[in-house]
Length: 483
Image 1: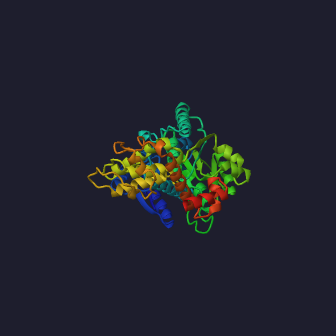
Image 2 (image 1 turned 180 degrees about the vertical axis):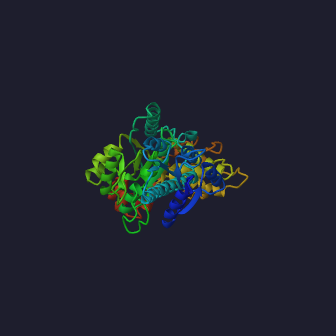
Image 3 (image 1 turned 90 degrees about the vertical axis):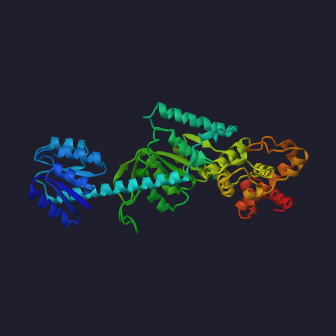
């Protein structure tokens, strides 16, 4: 690592250089602020600068301010004369990391340099991780629910969500200094929990801060603890260096804990303490670190049942759930399915420079009858897959075979009654489903049954529990539809 020493006394330069080179540092030197600036502009830069305060011409205060303007992450150690405490305090106020008062022991210098080195490495790691996380978020191209009214639902459940989103937004603007209320988002896998959480962050006073998400179900207990709280070098086998936790990386922003219901109980207690005290401690560490982070949590698990069985802490639930948002499954949003389908298929086509012009009658009926076990995520995947098959010129309607969905009964009946949805730009609003009710209900049951069995790998008992019906009734449906 490079270290830059700036001092107008050559003998001091020589002594400091020899000591630091023994510690395996590469030492750069300058006898004045002007000489330092010239070298810096020529590419001779360093993450740590050691400078005397009293120098002819532009002194150490000037150099300190110049360095912090050019490179805020660079650590600066200032050297002051004996009894010059006021100068040391002023240097710290201007951004110096540490100060050494003459005469000082060379081991003091080494200790200060090593502390600056560790701080710089930690901040550099944090910045690199944040860049990668931001790049990942951009690749995902997550759409906020406010865009083009995708989540402006007609269903009562989504109206309730929209109401609370407006309340959270209003309160965030009105009381930016107050602690934001905790939010717990409930909903099936793929129902849009992270999208809602991102919107809460984007419409809060923390919008300019980091957004970091972690799935608590994807990591083992030890790995999750290390991810959340960080660890010290040597704290366990494989810990070759100190690592920042996600709470530190998310300072000033929001941390999204997805699938909080899967978090091990031992970590639940530690998380509760962090939420209450706003402090963390690295695995293997002793120092408490203050963190300013808003936590938004989500899960598809029934936490009330988890609390009854003592698998989830009730005190943690109440700490997380000042505001609870329940997202409906896509199958329960039939009134807006056409608009949602239109939005995601248009977006997918546009992203590939193509044009979406609608669906064939058969495809429309199949979309309407499908039960969407994968929810919004499944709809998005279906739209992106179909966009791959569109011709560059556009104009063609998407047929059923592109969707890979079960064929809905009732297409022939609809055509026999003179019904056509070819003039319906994206959906199913003009299809007279009252005439096809019996067929559609049957198709719905069949599709739902097959989706249940697929989800449980054919396990009838698990499927019955998931559908909340008796196993005997489920067996009757299986016989009826030969599933």
